[in-house]
Amino acid sequence: MREDTTSLFDLPGFGQTHGRFEPARLTQARVRAGVTKADIAAEVGVSAAAIGQYEAGVNSPRADVLDRLARALNVRPGFFGIGRPLARIDTVNAHFRSLRSARVGDRQRALVTAAMVWELMFALERYVKLPEADLPAVAAGTSPADAAALLRRHWELPGGPVKHLVATAESHGILVTVRPLGEIDAVDAFSVVILDRPLIITTPRRSENVFRHRFSIAHEIGHLLLHTDCGEHSAAIEKEADEFAAAFLTPSSSMDAALPQRLDLAALDRLGRTWGVSPHSLIRRMVERGRTTESSARRAYQRLAVLDDPDADPTSSYAGEVPTLLRKAAELAGDNGAGIPALADVLKLSTSQVRDLLGMADQRPVLRIV
Image (cartoon, rainbow, N blue to C red; front, side, top):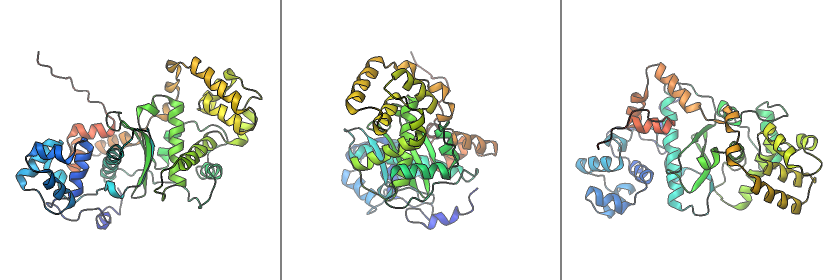
């Protein structure tokens, strides 16, 4: 259990008394539900301007309106009260691997997801001590390759492949979770730091292919090291994170000895399975190391597109790439008397919502009326 839990309530964005309305909670619940102010206003019988005033903290809803808001947004009325940690989405800086269609609303919804996962983690830390965040400080201007080498030294990783990247990241205090596409459709993956806790959130678009998933995790770790205090979103920033991921997963010194002298897709496939990276990534490394040309690489990518078999993805061979930190913490908390109902009470959510945040499928049979 964290010894400094009480002092966190004195930080900006954290409530200090129970029973009062927290405007940011309404914004959080509404954005998570994916509805507009006008939508929720119509459902609860008030004006959109009133919802705006509630969220701005100008007015507070009456008790009956609060009850209707809770029903409409599928939370308990107590969810809107202050008195427990709150990660405000307007103060969280994130780095997104977004689709071109990603809108501000999509990104806000993703941030709410991160905030809810963090709040669950914080609740768990009442009962379970999680690994402390363990990322080295990186001086401004450090190259992605040097940052990757620094992290390998800091984590005392051997010179070869990183066997279980997600498990390694979680053991060093980085919380990793995979959220369903219906929740954050337009965002592939992103990373945030909330109260010194780094989080990486990905979607099945990344996690269904183990090589893409590993590269995305390494990419987000690059952001956490290189761009934590940077609010900029640009192609240059994304390129640096890609360079970090390549250097971390396939260090140049190792690749110089391992890469074939000429493009050989079969050899690259074997090498990729050893290092946990895609043949596409290794082709790019061959270009960077002067083993092939850009034109040859383009032709190789075209051949790979023809040969690609999505069913051949060896994800099952990489058990260490499945996030387990949250679920294991919940199991340990349950063993110590703080099961799902207790967590739901702390978070003012339903037990099914807590299971969803933990990535636990609901095993109950479905009642159907025919």
